[in-house]
Length: 272
Ligand code: KIV
Image 1 (tube, rainbow, N blue to C red):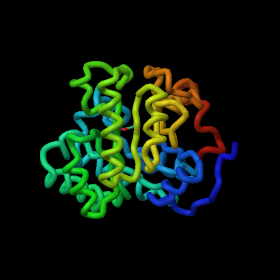
Image 2 (cartoon, rainbow, N blue to C red; image 1 turned 180 degrees about the vertical axis):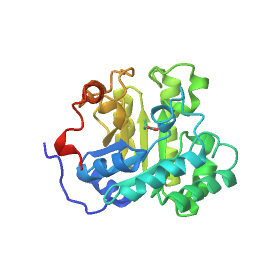
Image 3 (spheres, protein in one colour; image 1 turned 60 degrees about the vertical axis):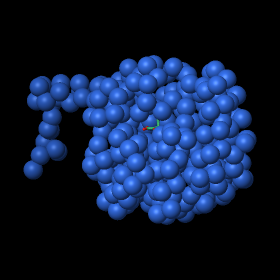
């Protein structure tokens, strides 16, 4: 199986459609700061998501609800300064687009103007169709997000798999079609049955990026801090850890503390 079919100097929304059509999988990861974005971009990731998961990962909140538009702009502008190749997608935070379509457009315009991000992501289907349309008419690319949409966690009441029942699966399928028709350039599907995700990916022409949605979609996304093993309390089945940085970093910090306490650091070569 090839890993890269065409080399792209810079990823655009058009490149992503091309990748889907060529059967090349799309790799997406989160970043919220300059240094991480630099490493992720340099590794060749296709999409960097400045996710509102920053609310959990960077700020320590229990949910994604508290993060504000100003916070998202701060994180996104740091990421944009580091990025050369990847397409940067920025989450519109909770409360910044659900009210009315004018408010949604104002939020999206602020993200684009003040952070330099390349596109925005919104959670939801038919309920926010008007907002998505209005943002799109301003020339701002929109990524959709269906399934387990964390901004609605208090409605769901639990982080378990969504759309297992027929009625919710049918709504998800029709929302995916609607997002395609409205003109979204891609769609994230979070924590839904793999069979349903496959059905969605096959039924729409825009790329479908999964997280906990199986392998029969057009790409995958993970939260970088999770896949690096920095956040060790979070253990969903879909998460593959590529490093155990929590343990490695703890070891490094312990060694430093011990070297300082024992007067081993700094040595003669580490001073002026
Ligand atoms: O905020 C985020 O990190 C996300 C991904 C989990 C898709 O929306």
